[in-house]
Image 1 (cartoon, helix red, strand yellow):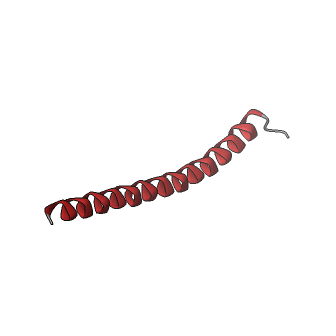
Image 2 (cartoon, helix red, strand yellow; image 1 turned 180 degrees about the vertical axis):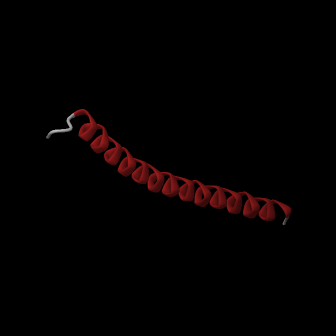
Image 3 (cartoon, helix red, strand yellow; image 1 turned 120 degrees about the horizontal axis):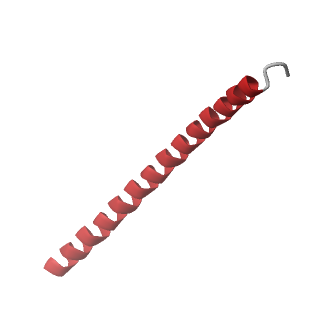
Length: 54
């Protein structure tokens, strides 16, 4: 009985860890996308400053 309970707790812990890691990965990918958008805008501004007449 105790062994079954221990196995259940172990599996539940692994599931919680897996879900947490997937949430972290999803949030990280959203942040990367957001930061890439900022980078593109900054590169556009730098380009405009370096080539003012174009």
